[in-house]
Each structure stands twice: as structure tokens, then as C-alpha cells.
Figure 1 (cartoon, rainbow, N blue to C red):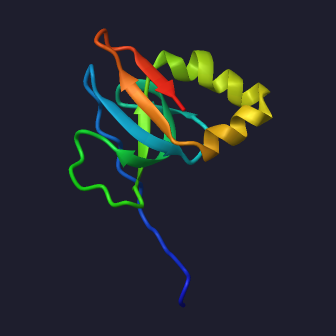
Figure 2: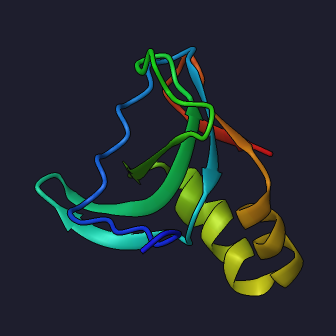
Length: 110
């Protein structure tokens, strides 16, 4: 069985960032719409590399799910992923910084 990896259960959800905070991550899949107890949100599997609310992330990162209602996902990210194969490749390969500005808006840079 060497080399095989098994995983059961659902990944945990990423803790919310507060205004002025940033997290670094890699996207593992495209956003999917899910129904939550708080209404529809986007759900994205991520590899979290840094986050102010996690004190001990391994150098390999931590697999989590980011659930968000951030407008940047629907207005900017989803259209690019549907219409731009070059961007989709970069989206899955690059590290990204997610930042919450002082007004609560989400900005994603990679």
C-alpha cells in the first residue's frame, strides 16, 4: 500500500478574514454554488498557505473549503474561468492573496 493516500470526510471551512487581513492560498478547483444555512454561497477547495487565524499551517499547506458570498467571485472570477483557458491554467497553478479591505470588500491577487 505504499504511495496510496486515503481521505474520508469533508474538509473544514476556512475561517473568515477580518478587514485589513490577508491569506495566501492555491485554488484546487473552480467555484461551485452551494446552499448553506446562510443562503447560496460559492464553495472552492483550496490549499491554505497562510492565514492570521491559523497559527500552525504546515509548509505543505492545509486543505480547506472557502465558502463565500464575495461578489468578486461571481462578477470577475467565474466569467474568466468560463471564457479564458489561459487564465484557468494560471488560476490553478499560482499562489493567490485574498485580502479584505477596510470596508469589507474582498480582493484577490495572484
